[in-house]
Every structure is written in structure tokens, then in C-alpha cells.
Image (cartoon, rainbow over all chains, first blue to last red; front, side, top):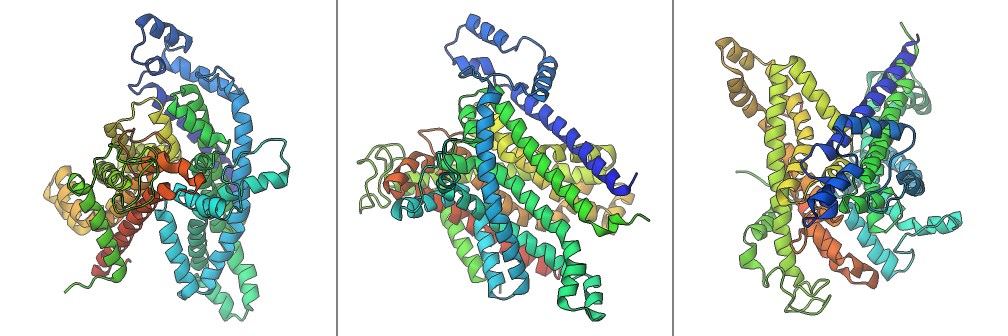
Length: 318
Length: 271
């Protein structure tokens, strides 16, 4: 087997294993811990009989391993159970919200990724001069600022004072694309700002790293034009780190979405998860946790695979 | 004579100020934390420097007590994550073998789930108390300290003075606490600032989502949540605690940066 294929297959297997282990962890986290779901739902004044009934209804009278495998096989077949609080099918409630969340994350990525790479290149071009220093300062500030601060500052000044964009991002299926984009303008801006600085800085580091290698110096010394140096030598070696940066930040985006959705009352998965954590609706929390973990692990896997595929050294087996 | 750069001075000043207010909160705050003293969302005045909050409590007093809660939780969680993470990390590096493998793979597994999501999953079944919050945050964050501590200790573990101590017949405890710990301290202390910021942002986020500190007590994230509905009506009360979180985090960051530069310049650069 070709070594690249073998490495890719290894990554796939590893990620599947990791996801499986993560599902055990999520299930265990909500089961083994001392909190009692039935007690939580019914409150302190519940009678022992009603507690016993509810436990039976939830399948709590079965051993944990049986419940785990039931849950896992259900999830594999697309059945995540029903919500405790309203008895509705979780997959049904989730699918629309997952679509909304991905819609928001997608547009944030569309804005943030090209902008970050462009600014990262700019920082490399003007290294140690003011654009570079400005970018470093902004990065320092942005990792220290909570997402909801950026959200509320924008909402207060852009949404309320200037009235340029709606402050609450409700979207419906019947809205046209333009209306939807207008509704999510502010959350997309917040998410962009959250990931931009980090992505910019990592892009800068990745490209600087490549530009300082010995083969770039060799290429310059043998008289290639700077365009040829970049196109033939720097670019192929910079793809992998840059894609890695982008993927890691997209994974971060998926989590940042939780807070931003709550700020702008956006009907996505993050809001759904937070609501049901407060209501202690365990099946919903498990389902959301599993999906978030799957997306996160999946994006990390794609980052790994892309860097394997893009690595010129692996393309020519010895 | 030690020269402190201006950025670090600003950082030290604000960090000191916030910690001072946190420690002496009952003496400083002009009103009790939960007492209703005025109308809803009064603007700033000489009686209420920052105005009043969503049910008419003095915002400045709530900010001071809220800062106390935020800083207390973040400090406790940082101490927990540091003690646990560094001791386990050093142990893994010194013992090696399957112990190291098992612990490192387990940490990989925990880090494969986003921290916020994992915390939400756990908090959905646990009662939300101060102790639980500190434990959850400290344990989740100790994975990051573990990785750093292990990486640093693996390097130190092969140095001559550690070899000498091993040949002398010193036990593992001596190796970890007397040989490795003093030499690993400076990178760990610099990391401590970052972990503290992370803890501040994390507890604020949880409280903002309504899953952290429970009313009538509040930390800064909780005060944002209480006052967020005012934003739409043009009342900026929710921005005050949010700005406090940001300035605290930036100040600690400036101090941590300075400590890092200082400790690395002592050893003649960072490698």
C-alpha cells in the first residue's frame, strides 16, 4: 500500500477510535457522577414511588453498560432518543438547529479565513514594522476578551445606536438568503473577530517558519525570481501548516458559536444545548455533546489528513 | 535595580487593583450586594457611580463583590489545575513506560472534546455550587498544565544532575520535588498567568450562560447576564462587567508576558 494511503487510513481509524472513546466519556460523565437525573427532574419534594417510576421510564434500572450500548447503537442508526422535558424526538428538533449553526459557522469561515491569511501574509511582508506590531497587539487583546463582550459592544453601538443591523438574529426557513445574511451580520462579525487574530498569528508563524528554511535560501541563491521561490518552494510547504491553522480555528469556531448564539438569540444548536443543560435534560445534552465532539474531532482529522496529503516529502516513497 | 517596562506597570497596577478590591470588598463597596437601593437601571450619579442594575441594586457594589467571586473561583481553579497537572506531568515524565502512556492518552482523550462542551455536559447532572465549579474547571484545565509540565520534565529528566541524583539512590519523590520542580518552575509560572485568564473567561462564560454562579450571588459573567436585556433599549449596564473581565485578563496577560521575558532572558534567551 502507498505510504500516504496508509497514513490516511491510520488517521481515519484513530479518529473513529477517539470519537468512540469520547462517546464513552460523555455518557459516563452524565451517568456515573453522583447527581441523580430523576431527583433533579422531579425536585426535592418527589415521593419515592414517583422517583422509582421515572427511573424505570428512563431505563435507569438497567446497568450502565447496557444503557450505553443501547444509546450508542441508537445514535449510529440516527436515533438519539426523546427529550425529557417535552417528549419530542431529539433528531427532529436538532436537524433544523444544526443546519442553522452550520450556516452561521460557514459564513463566519467564509469571511474570516481569506482575511486571516491575507493579514498573516501582510504581517510577514512587514515583519517587525508597525503592521506586524499592530497585529500582535490586537491578538493579545482578542485572546483576553470574552466573546460576549465583543457581541454586546457590537450590539450596543452598531445595532442599537447606529441601527445598521438587527440586534436579534432570528431566522426562518422562509427567509431569502439576503434577509438571512442581514440577520446574521452581527454574529458573523463577532465570530470572525474571535478567530481572526489567532488565525492571523498562526499563519504568520507558519509562513515565517517556511521562509527561514535552508531550501528557500538555496532557491534564492541559485537565482530564482522571488515569484518562483514562492510558487515552487515556499507555497507547497506552507499549505500544510496553513490548512492546519484554518482547521483548528474552525474547530474553535464550532465551540465559540455556543456563546454567540446565546448573545444574539440565534436558533442554533448552542442555544439548544445551553437551554437543556439548565433544564437538566440529559438525553439532549448527551446528543448535543456527541455532535459537537464529532464535529471537533472530524475537523482535527481533516487538518491531519490535509497536512499528510500536502506534504511533498511523503509523495515520493523511498 | 529592576526596570519594569510601562506595559507591565499598567498590567501590575490593574491586577493589583482588582485583587485589592476583591480582598477588601466588604470594606470598599458603598452598598450591600443584594439590597435594592434605587430604581431600575438608573444612570450613573454621585450616589451610584455606575448606576443601578436590572432590579435597582447598586451596580458598583455588585461589581466589587462580583469581582471577588470571579477572582476567587479563577484563583482556586488555577491552583488546583496547577498542583494536579504539574505533579501528574512530572510523575509521568519520571516514571515513564505504561504509566506515562496511559495518562497521556487519557489526557489526549479529554482534550479531544471541547472544554466548554465537556463542562456543560458534566454540569447538566451536577448541582452547580462553587466547589463543583472549581473542581470541574480545575480538572479540565489541568490537562493543559499536564502537557506542558510533562514536556518540560522530560527534558530535565535526562540532565546530569538528575542522573546523579538517581545514581545516588534518591527516591522518585525527591527527584520530582527537589530536582525537577525547581528547574521547571519558570516556564510553569509564565503559563500560570495564561491559565488564570482562561479560568476567568471560562467562569464568566459559564455564569453568562446561567450555569455558573447562581443568583442572588453573581460574578462578572452573571452580572452581564442580568443586565443584557437592557442593551436593546440602549442601556449599557451589561458592558461594565464585560469590560472589567477584559481589562483583568489583559492586565494579567501583560504581567505574564513580562515574567516570561524576564525569566527567559535570565537564561540567555529562549533556546
